[in-house]
Length: 116
Image (cartoon, rainbow, N blue to C red; front, side, top):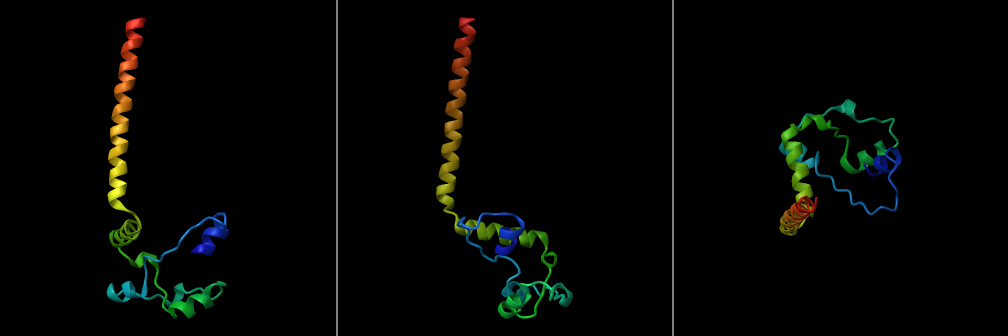
């Protein structure tokens, strides 16, 4: 994944990105009894050897996961990295600030109507 993002998407190498596998782990493959597709392992890919050393010759297509399950896995992985209490505090602060700005805008508009 890192190689794909760096090479194919042109991301800058010195950007601090932490990659975490959150879907198609061996545990999920076994727990969800996902179908193995031997043809999914591309031996011509230069990364195939490293993949096989790390995961074995198990190849499962991402499509094997139900979209709702995949979405939940991704959401859980993101939320595990976030301070959700702080996030909610920031959302509430943003709402209050937006409301205060709207009130000020309305007052300025009212003053301008009075002047003209």
